[in-house]
Amino acid sequence: RVLFRSYTVHAVGSARGALEQLRHCAYDVIVCDVVMDDMDGLALTKQLRSRPETSSIPIMLVSMNDADSERQNGLAAGADGFLSKKDCVSGRLLTEISSAVSRRQAARP
Image (cartoon, rainbow, N blue to C red; front, top):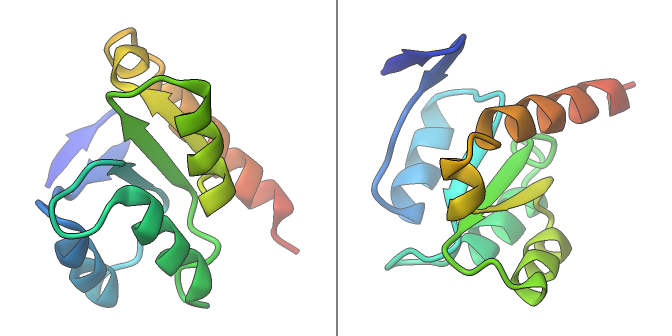
């Protein structure tokens, strides 16, 4: 666990690891790479959206590919946001996470 600007971060090495971690802990946001060995981030996002216990957690996808089609695929899968790794390096990750969390909280009844 690392405290990073008021976020506690848990890192896992795979989509299956993320699914296992989500069985034991509650999270305010999920940041997920699109490209992973066992399951891609799009499939993981779809799976999380289909589960009642994870359907409302904001999901930010991160990809090396910054093509608009990749972004559209991520949003269509159910992600709240999509950033290229260049966007992350430029410092947008925390801003986008805060925005996604705020939007989800405002949408709650």
